[in-house]
Structure formats: C-alpha cells, structure tokens
Image (tube, rainbow, N blue to C red):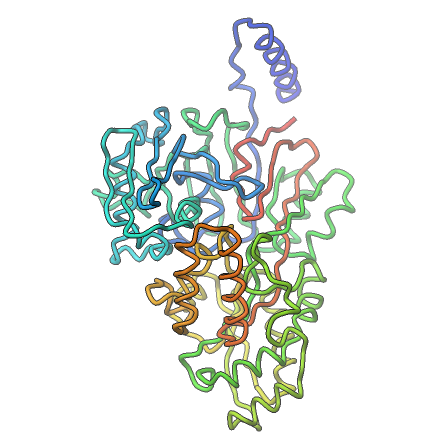
Length: 506
C-alpha cells in the first residue's frame, strides 16, 4: 500500500516540478531493493580486488574520476571535466565541487593525489598499478584541480582511470590504515553491514553528487545456488538478481512475472597456461594445446552456446575475427605432431584449477578441456577451489593451468598491460613475456592515430595467439533478472552493476 501511494505521490511531484511549483519530499516512500547474487566479495579494498564479486559490490560504494557508460564512452564520475595538454604529457581534471565521501568530507584533489600515490606504491599490491606507471608527479593547485604529469604520452590512461581499481578513497583513511577494513567512498550507496558469505546492507547516499538514488537502499542476500535465486525471484522474495549461470538465466524468460536482461560483455573465458612450468615452457607444447581445443565445443557444452568464440581482444573496435588467428580451427593431427616434435608423443600429466561459482561454467569448461586434451595424451587433473583460495593461487601463479574468467576493457592496453608488458604487475599470473609483446603494447600506448592503433593491436593479437601462453575461449553474456516492477537498470558491456543507482520500484 505504501509503495502504491509513493508512486502516486512521485507522479504528482514530477508534475509540480514541471509547473515550477514547490517540490515535496518523497524520500520516505522509496523502497529497498532486495537483491541476490551467488558470490560474495572477497575484500573491501578497491585498489586490490580482482574478483568480479568484489568489484560488483564496491563499485556501488566507491567512485573513480571517470567511468564508462553503456556505450563504452568515458563520462564524468568524481571529475566534471578533463583535458590533455597538446603534447599529451599532462592530464588535468576538474572535480565536482559537490562530491563528498560518505563520512561527510568533501572529495578534494588531495584525496585524488593520495589515492594514486597509494596505487603506485608497490607495497600496496594494487591490481592496476601497471596502468599508471607513466605518472611522474601529481600537482594539486587547488581543492578541485588535479594535474597528472606524465613521463610520456599515454593514450589509454584515461580509460584505465574508469576502473574500480582506480577508485578515489579518503586520504585520511589511507593515513589511518583503514582502507580494506572500512568502506568509505563517494558513490551512490553506503555499506551499513557486511556479513561475509551471507548478506550486505547498503543504504542510499543522499549526499551523492551523481544525483538522486532511486531506492532507499539495497539488501543483498548471498545465495550460492543460483537455482535458489531463481526460486526466490519466482516467489517474489527477491526483486533483482545477478545471474552468472546460463543454465539458470535461460529459464527466466519462461517466468511471466520476471524479465531477463542479457548483455554481451568484454570479460573472457580463458584457459591460462603457466609457461614457467615444464613442459608449458615449450612453444610447441603450448601450440599443441591450442590446436587440440575445440573452443566452440567448450562454449556449447559448458555455456549452452550462450556467447561467441573470441580472440584475446574482446572490444568491438579492436577485435580480430578469431578464424584469422592461430589454430582456432581444431586440428588434432597438428597438435599430435607438435607434441611429438617437443618430445612428448606420449603426453604428460598436469593439473588445472577452477573456482567454484566464478564462473559457474568453470568446472564444466575444465571437464570439456580435459576430454579434448586427452586425445593428444595430456592427462589433466581438475582441482576445484573456493573462490578466495583460487584467487590467492591465481595471483601467485601457483598452477599448471587455470580456467579463468578475466575482465575486459574498452582499450587493449588498459586490458592487458599488467600481464603482457615487462613492467606488468600481474606477471606472476601471466608467467610469459617477450620483446614483441612488450614492444607492441608500448607502441599502442603512445600512438594517438586510431587507425594505426588498430594495426598495432591486430599484430599484438595475432602474435599472442600464436605463442599461446593462454588459450582464449569465448565471451559470454551478463545476465540480470528482475521483477517486472523494477525499472531503470542500464547494463554495460563491462558487467557493471552501477546502474542500480538509478533503479526504482514501481
């Protein structure tokens, strides 16, 4: 009854505002969104988190200087405007003067400077540190102006700044050493309570400079079984759900009270090899694995065909047709010859790790790959781990092979420099670099001509597919399921849930 009244009152206020009449507060009649997802955050430090489950929570609380919209265009967040100097070596931001942290303090240039200094400090272990190594110094001429002085032109740095891993945190909290123990951002929601692997309670940040939040808050339930999430949607106990499992998501359209949002995403499913371990240190062995894998079969079997086979670059502007890349058509005979040439005609044994639930298709992918590699003599043992254990092993490069779901980006350099450059801070994860990859990444970083950048990164994609440190499989879809009285959510190819800031309940 209250919700019905709220809808009428909001309509009246909208008419009154259009007529220039005095507005009436409707805050008391907004609703709390009941949300469910299957994986909980693994931590609260926005600069360190790599798990999608952490990012999805923290991007509702923290904000970067800029963000990507649903068309992958860079739009304001904490910053109102930005400008590169003519030589590309200075990047100046003007901050929104109304931006405030959730503790009531204004967001100032000092907070921006402190945040990036923390990211650049190797001791922090920041996930995106490699994206910002061109920053030579940071000036703060006044409270709302930040000037980044760069050691060289850095075209993708602005895209890199759209990431949660580049979130602005309070300088005072950095000094206090409380980043990661508390969550104080400037985003649309405040974290009121977190019971790990159980629930989160978020309240609307009424001082959010980005506008009015459409609901009073979000109550998040962590339900590891996505069939249980669907059951809760059916019975009306949940308003909105993030779904990762296509087996569950494809059932939603059959429910008359529910609606499914299905969005192609930039993240990619991949089999990561560890070229620092024998025999994956041999090119012929890595290439044999690439030739032995039927990527379409992995997609069809593990994910019901919900996606498409992909090369390393998943953003439409730069992606190469996978059929033009090395061994994307399965060739078992070629794979066997490569194994024999490397001295492994009888194969070898290895272990592949996979995380429970992220993605839900991980175990199925590993099983299909296990079957396919058995045809060339590779005996693959599958080790399934809890997500936090998996992430720890993944970051340390403690695996022979890993089935992974990795994030994408609108720019190839922002997406891959932390893995495939000599200064990349996730080199322990990649365990492979060569002069060609590093050189191509650096050329793409400084080149300003879009056509020339496409050529550079097409060469990068061709080379990395041929040397095969990883075997890229497919891109999938991002799914959300909502009751039909939930309105306003706009999905993005990054998989962001930031659009919840504008959701309302009819």
